[in-house]
Length: 347
Image 1 (spheres, rainbow, N blue to C red):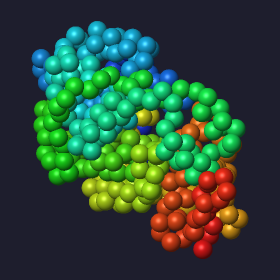
Image 2: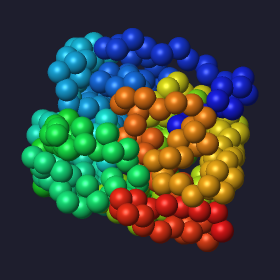
Image 3: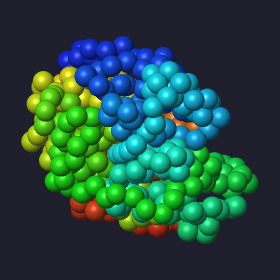
Image 4: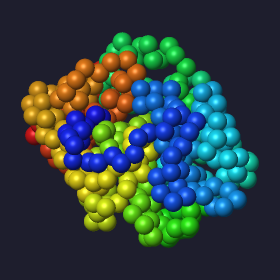
């Protein structure tokens, strides 16, 4: 979700983005690398921490032809041919774990939260040639447009394994409250949720660095969606609660290293912007539900713009999540209509 309010010049961005295949030093022994993605959000940030004869890498990009080319360029360029001894993945999404299995097989230790690792490994093993009945029912309940659903069911489903390497058995678990060492620093591990369950963030004890992955992004709000794997979830509640909890640790002097966009200063403000943005969305949505609607009919009040093409899927799961939140917090009713869609109405 684009967060226009966040574009105000209240956050500061001290660094310009490196070119794909290049890297820049954001702090002593810390490289910011950008990895290309085949989507509108055309990059994911990786961070490499110098361990002397090797690197600790935070996040692993996505497996696709241009991504593999970019990875080779990074190894030969800013990574100086040194191996990756440890890989830390902030969460389970394909743009963050895509090359994890490859790096493990090359000798890297993988560190993730338990939920993130189990989810990633389950999804990479779950290969479908056609949409399962549960997924079709989910799309209908979310109010997917009939023409979109008809087209989608004629196509092969996206499989996690399409862009994520097979993941070997075994990892090292990260948990809330852990302290871990990498890059000559000690880091507190603090977990968030909503965008991804048990999303790990890392807060340096030695200097003013915070690695937020996709839990906190500048300029855009992380996608908060409901999915067929947990169709009765309320990720909006989880995400707002996470932002409120992390706000207690946020200070203005930290340099935030996010999963997308540029590193920035202004973490307390950004967390407040993100929380306020979603409360604003919920207020507009609740007013819209004076007219009963499915989630697929609420794009205008939620996003305030037309949703086209490849945006549709992420927009639908986010709209569904916000409708579900109003239902689970007793602000809206829901009932199934004859087409199998949940129709929400303001109480």
